[in-house]
Image 1 (cartoon, helix red, strand yellow):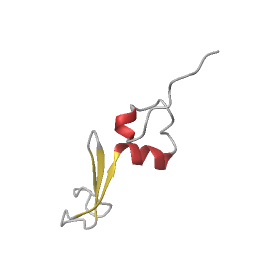
Image 2 (cartoon, one colour; image 1 turned 90 degrees about the vertical axis):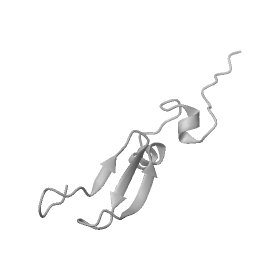
Image 3 (cartoon, one colour; image 1 turned 30 degrees about the horizontal axis):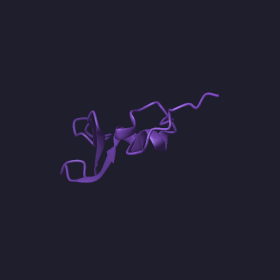
Length: 66
């Protein structure tokens, strides 16, 4: 929320992305960050934590046993 008026939204969180707005009362977005990219930025996206298709990476969860 806006730190001045407390009513305007500065960012919105959706199930698959975060949208950040550049103006407090204009709602023009400047960034759309996919969920996996946000988790990578935060350091929480580890191998196996999210399905490979969500991260856009190939799954490396296969373990080779001898």
